[in-house]
Amino acid sequence: MNKSNLNEIFKSVLEADRAAVVLCDLEHTIVYMNPVAIKRYEKWGGADLLGKSLLDCHNEHSREMIIKVVNWFQESPENNLVYTFYNQKENKDVYMVALRNDSKELIGYYEKHEYRDREIMKMYDL
Image 1 (cartoon, helix red, strand yellow):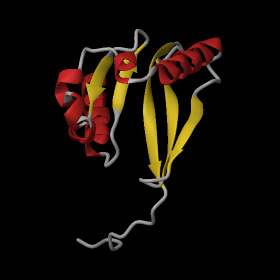
Image 2 (cartoon, rainbow, N blue to C red):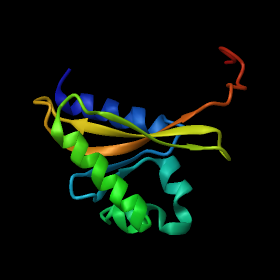
Image 3 (tube, one colour):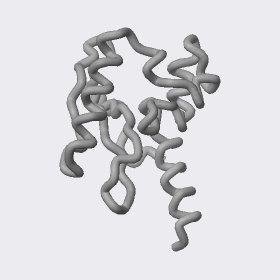
Image 4 (cartoon, rainbow, N blue to C red):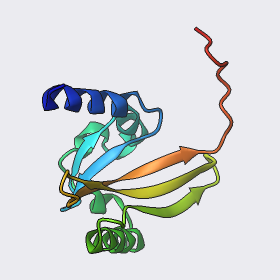
């Protein structure tokens, strides 16, 4: 499989995710938002947030923590996941995750949402 096809597959995985996915580069620029993220952040600009700084979307304390985590990611290729908070209203854990290239160099980051609610969909309900 060539790299182009693999990129298409990876994009498809992100676009099928039921959680919001926002990818940022090391300058904190929002470079990708999946459809759920665009809808979730619609009142703050939705798709218009692409190309803007993620830091502008957060308060001073959150900005400081984002920068602190990214600096920690840069310290070692082993530093890849940080638990950032629990959202009680949505019953989910939230993490920051490092994005690395094949050489293990940090190229960006994203926020990962893991919902704790039990799935209500029936198994294999085709």
